[in-house]
Image (cartoon, rainbow, N blue to C red; front, side, top):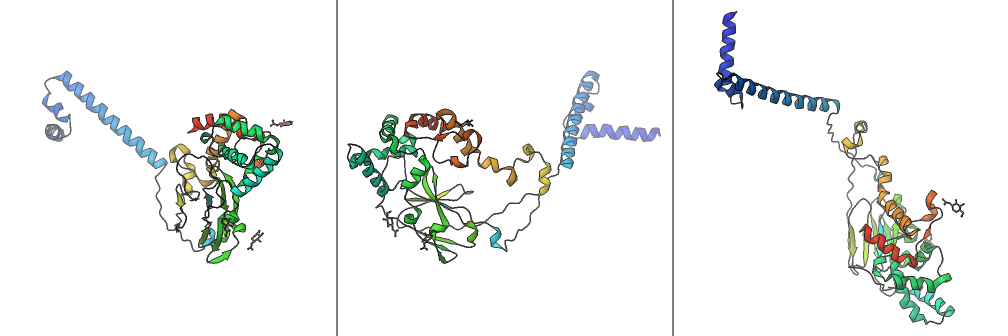
Length: 338
Ligand SMILES: *[C@@H]1O[C@H](CO)[C@@H](O)[C@H](O)[C@H]1NC(C)=O
Ligand SMILES: *[C@@H]1O[C@H](CO)[C@@H](O)[C@H](O)[C@H]1NC(C)=O
Ligand SMILES: *[C@@H]1O[C@H](CO)[C@@H](O)[C@H](O)[C@H]1NC(C)=O
């Protein structure tokens, strides 16, 4: 037995002498200085127990919430199961010259100013799209001058003054078959102006071909900040937008990428998984526009025309649309948000 003990001891000493592990060698070389030896022993023991603790907790964490990677190839045999994205097409021309001329005519009849004067004044309607592009006092003066001729339903009025989708879209081909553009697209107010937004996405299984009207005959020039192009196309879920100049053709090839999360992930708290399932994120998609709406309502007590108040509920019930008299307030809100 004692031989075995001696052999063990010898081996241990040999190990501490030769080992390349940091610190262990010291236990052998300073064996004549007991205090130092005790210090180094404790030092190393603390290190080892710390490392063991970290390894064990990581291991337990992994066993409790394993990392699952599963790759499978989803097949899209039925293209119908994949909805065509809601495409919006916006003309750089936000308001129709023809319609504004008619409005200016109507204004001239009720008031001393000439039609041309009114038309020039109406350029301040740019304040609805870019509050920062117009003078707040001039815009408020126009609002006062329009008075009763400017309806409370600003949204409907601006929609009426927008170039129609019928004049913007010359032809629409769905999967190679000519279709009625008016049935496919609907004019929808947005900060980009009124855009034609694709409605019947379920009918398109393969390709959508559009021919746009590049005529400038109906353009109404308004002050606007920065660069603007003839048309812009935007697809939700794609953070880019394509812009198109007259005479240009553009083909956008859409390749669907379907990401499907393992249902096991639902057991993980949100903070750990760092991503949402689609139904968990619905409110998040709406979050930024809602936040802008709320801050505008709080500051100016009115809602920008791009929000549909008729579908709003609760607190927004009695809120009306902002008009040009609110330009100064909208400018300060815009200044804070950008
Ligand atoms: C397209 O549809 C609209 C409304 O649905 C209709 O008024 C129009 O006549 C149609 N145009 C053609 C060319 O069929
Ligand atoms: C193209 O747009 C112009 C200006 O809006 C309009 O006068 C014209 O009728 C449109 N062309 C077609 C074919 O709709
Ligand atoms: C809206 O106005 C009506 C009548 O003025 C009032 O009875 C109602 O409480 C108001 N609603 C809200 C949410 O303020």
